[in-house]
Image: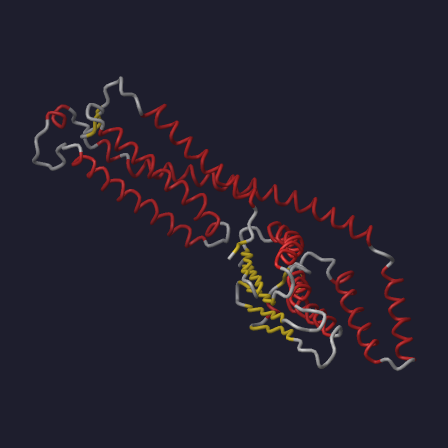
Length: 367
């Protein structure tokens, strides 16, 4: 299995995590770790190193809070408007982390053979009446780290969203310019198709006439109907069916053609970016069927209340190296559109074997 990912994005994400870890480490050594100065807070002190062991645990716990909030709770809950789940998850995170931190501190006390019970005697305990001060900072300290992570995560998402919108505008403008450059007068194009269709009718060539009508419908959708930000999913499905009908016209009735499309659910409830699904179908037909109609292409769409799952499975009829090269070029462009249009709301997975090539696209819709 190979998941389509943006290698550069993953690299910078890991770099960001590394810098966050480095920042917490620098804070530990710059602010907390001072072995030359006597430090004593409650049961913990720097004479035996227990204070630094405990503070190191605090830093690790803070990293857990920071990473969970920034890379889990905010993208998967807050940004998807799941406010109740986000609030509950935040409370469970801070509460469980505080409990774990307290338990680890107790373990460190025992590890360093220091008294931890109320009836145990220790000169250190008797010499400092502020021995419980350390534990009183656990909840406020973790809450402060949570708020810092929340501020960082929201600002991070705002910057990323602004960058995506700017890039999407550039991509849209570039696509519009390319479209205008490549577009021969569409009125001339459709008039020419109508003229050719009239010729086929005059010569009683029904098969060619049907092909022209289907081609005209496909081209009209691509030129006119798709010139919007979103379109009804049912219209996108109808366009794909017309495209598949065009593909079928290439083959004879006795060819062993296995080309199917199944739709489950109610597609009329969703809107989708136009022409976001067709490239997968086109890729499957191109590489899954031979000129003699051998091979297969199966298209399945499952429509749920808040997501769709689109699967295109095709046989591999050509050389694997050629298949991978050409399909990768086309799918890379679609992957880029998906990242811009559905950030953090889609999964695109490619599954390959010696005989099959499967694309699974999941798109989640906002409430």
